[in-house]
Image (cartoon, rainbow, N blue to C red; front, side, top):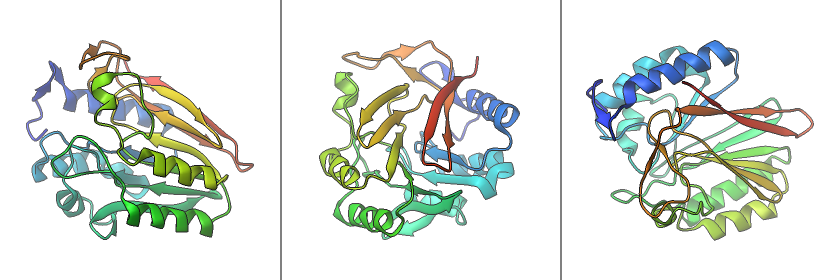
Length: 239
């Protein structure tokens, strides 16, 4: 949030984000890409995006961003103009790194908590995967799976069946990596794995009826993408 001392559910999210970012720098300073899968802000203020840019400035050449349900597309573009690839009104990215195609999707629906990709964006994804026969990873905020928490499963990706059908048509998609649920989960959805990641701030308990804060530490997910198409992934926590 714009106020660096502001708290969410009793947690100062700015302080925890800075701690997680420091851990990434210490443990994985040579990583090729740092990908933030949405909810860059909670208040959608331009000042918040500008503060975030300042914190992420050392990572800027390696940084990739996509929006979540709490984001504001235009203000994201204002703060990170060189890191956003517009697709109509959507904020996406696509690039090839080490033989892998990395694709970031925009599941943001203005004014709503749930997500949707839409026909145009899924058609773009289909084209990008067809044009690159090598291994690929897809990133988006809302996971295309249910996680067993009633309140979260009501605000998930609305066109998840269409996305999963598209992924099944492309055997080169090795993983779909998401945020949104503030918890760690790994689900096999052949030919891909679905990974959700912890938040850098508040964590949510798994399999609950309503929102419950989990006292486990914040964290981040690491992806190792091997030249032969293998993918290895794990979560690291930051006490």
